Length: 355
Ligand code: ADP
Ligand code: TRP
Image (tube, rainbow, N blue to C red):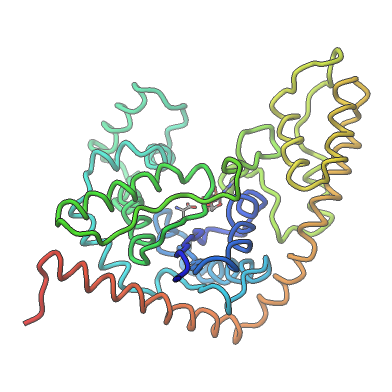
């Protein structure tokens, strides 16, 4: 029986951090033995925030090296760069004809990014939403919300649908985009009375999708949050970041609930340490004997066990341009094979025919 198709990608907007690793990359590595996997670098998606043209390629290269260093094997999985598959851009145009501006504007990630582009710093509320809409339409300053940001979910849906992927391993923050992808697939299939696109689902090995917290006490580790531990961080830098993590004044009485910053440290410990170590610190918290300095030291040690071998391999791959080139050329060939077949089917279904 043919293996199910798995597809996922990460935008080339900088180095990968622990959130990317536990939310996406480590799952990619585990899946490559059991599924027909395709992992790509979303460089077109990265264009929505106007990266410096000189650094765009550097970022693509570093993510590629990070994929390989984390253990994605180009002989088992297809690794490719999004912009090497021009069929994606054409299908993006075609699918956009079936996507509503309203549903795109209601997407949480769009509102978030639009807020950033307009320089609005307030949190989200309904009033705020109306304010954003008014500003998007009426804005006459040089602050613009580009159409690429609005149609970001269409492009992501196309990445998935063009490969007819069944499973899409992504973090919790991407669930809404996946929901839209399923909706667009259903809509296309039913509008044309075809059964072309499967409806893709998120994938996690049991359990709920992970959300890796930041070191600043915030809910999520993220590039734009400035609270990341990068896979490429040198030992000293990494230790320093962990030792500086936000804490509180400590448990006041036995059985006190965890504050957000401490809960975050425990979440990170759960991801990187053994259950025995986690239990030891949980017990120490419960009976108020915990010393946050010890907790952080342990955490830094355990994170380093995960990241050090990866960092060493990243540094090897990044200097091997010839190998990186071979990997993406082979990947593009494989990705284009399936993509061009789907695109021809869509053109035919929509009535675009050759003379
Ligand atoms: P960032 O939020 O740092 O810009 P991306 O949006 O490029 O990261 O995310 C790439 C992948 O990593 C996605 O699948 C996303 O769900 C996952 N991811 C990013 N940050 C986290 C996090 N803190 N916890 C879990 N998964 C995450
Ligand atoms: N939007 C995803 C992110 O920000 C990246 C992405 C683009 C993606 N296309 C995709 C993920 C297709 C999975 C499948 O992380």
